[in-house]
Image 1: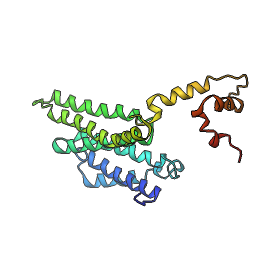
Image 2 (image 1 turned 60 degrees about the horizontal axis):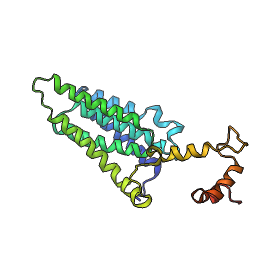
Image 3 (image 1 turned 45 degrees about the vertical axis):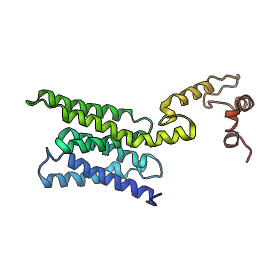
Amino acid sequence: TLGIPYLAGWTALYTIACAAFLYAVSPVIRNAWMRLLLYVALLYNPVAFSNQVNRYYRDAGYYAIVFLCIALFLGMLLHSGRRRAVLAGLGGFALGWAAMVREDSQWLFIYAAGCLAAVFCFCIFSLNRRFGSAVLACALIAAGYGAATVPVRMINYTEYGTFALDEYNSGSFAQSYGALSRLDGGLRDSSVTIPYAERMKLYEASPAFAELYPMLDAPD
């Protein structure tokens, strides 16, 4: 481990994300004082001080990663040449990072696709119609995303025999939860997915489910 305090690390990442956003919009906000004012406003955004993001929970850093993704892909859209390529690669990596922090990050893929589509549109309506920059950006996004997620997939494959990034989006979680919630022993309580009596029967019928007994129902 790096030994960085949890909340301090996420705060540092948010500071970097704010700086990345300023760099992203620099082609359209050229006044340095205006960018400095925007930077201060972003740093002291009330969201950054809310209770939701100042506790030891993954949401403490998720907002920083999301903002970093937004900044990098916006920069990819507004910049050109080598800068666009670098921002695209970093954006892909940040996108993979966000997908690993929260399983419901699919909306960020839509945002990234929209920015990439806008880059292609600029190429179409420009006079030179050079698509090389847009194609390279697309490839670097995929490369950055792979660099972030493939190591985790390899670990999952080595340890669990599946190349999935997480069980939530792989379908196994939904299938197992659906199978368990369909059980009905006549004691169904809407506030309890699997009542105690049904869990006892499952422990006897399923060796895999029986592994959960010490965590769920073992006496103290």
